Image (cartoon, rainbow, N blue to C red):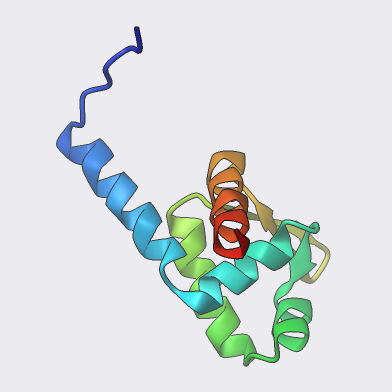
Length: 99
């Protein structure tokens, strides 16, 4: 028998925000790229052919949800995945799309 987890208001909000984060194609592309390792804003923008401003905006959104984290090395900032649970869900959704 599975344990029943109560959905309090805070949990419900966080779950819906996570789905919102994964509902945007640009954020999915960024998260998918970050699955390969850490990257700078410039590298993400160049690889995905997006503006640095757009990438920064999306990374801020993902960071606020604790889906990505950053590390500063000198003057450079590198982003990486902060929540493997969501990445597992993302990979499963991609597999489902290819099914």
